[in-house]
Length: 207
Length: 309
View 1 (cartoon, each protein chain N blue to C red):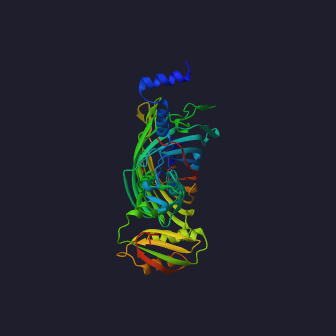
View 2 (view 1 turned 45 degrees about the horizontal axis):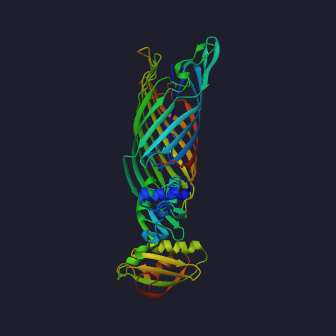
View 3 (view 1 turned 90 degrees about the vertical axis):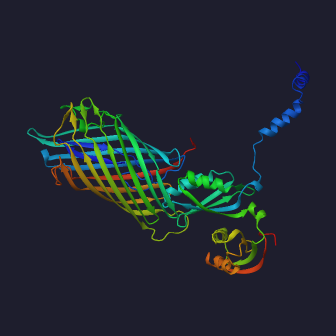
């Protein structure tokens, strides 16, 4: 039987064009990749891990977090009981996924802070954005340390540090933290000197 | 791995007992977690040397147990312990002169499940309680003989019996120090007319971080000073349904040592020193139980399995 005859018989039997069916099957086969907008944290997330108190325990935690989709690297800081999760560009991870990974490692998840978040779009009007000039940054580690310090400051919603531009952009709740306190936080994250450039209402980048 | 040597009836009895995993105590288990899907492989070397006034005996024990731990869930960890090589020998004075008797072989395997029942976590500290149940299975040979005939059962690598055990472990760990304690009981079954006495035990361990004094960023390696205590009671052996006299005893050991812990491996060693012992409840005194020492060295490796069940 020729291919043409098979196609005609299939159309008569099902009422559906085989070509259309092929497209539907193909589309349903393509693995679902969650759009970034559906993911909570992007860029870098820092999770507090309760119950982790020895080097041997850190290995399992790191492996569980590395197994999350989109995770590029994980740095565990035992002293601070934290794990910093670096995400691939365009990838994101839900806070619930991070919490689940910490639990599977045998620990209790604490606060999760996101460097960037799709929640920024939902930033309440009372959040303010501040931009700082930061002197003294020499490497990516400096930028990472400042980001982590800012994210741990009570009242900070998100923080992004640009090493090349020597700038830090912070979205914060003015009821809980002031630009002066943010300046001090950056200064104390290392041998840095921060000065406030701009402060306005809205999420980072919206001013 | 918990190893015990009790001199009874002029022969050495060495029981390789409980599996362990994770940084923590070197002579017994800990309640610290094994991540879901994580595996831990531990290899031990145990050397026991001792002597006793009873028949002027010298006792030697050597064991290489391997322990595999696997985190089935975040709370349930399974352990399998295989004493891949066990050597026991005793050298005693007789009217005909000194004679040596001993055996080599694979010992009795132990399978153990540990469940985290209570967990209180804070940044930099954890408190956990984890009961365990286990079964020692008769995989070791217990029919070895030498030129004098069949070896006494305490000298055989295996017991020949099925021995269930249970207990509980408590751990409190901070970044600076750790305390572990356990208590448990093992019912020793009978095989071919002979049964070892049942055992009860309690152990404590304190580990204090001596290096680095200040923690930096990341996951630095720790060097711990370790002091452990093991108290072991053993009931009387049974032969053909009758109690074998003078085979029960109580022994207490203190074990100073060092432990080096990184995120991938653990190296540790302790020397187990007798503090006090009694045989057949005659009071704490040296009756041959106590005058031996034991060295335990530990190499432990952390790996992650691709299998999550």
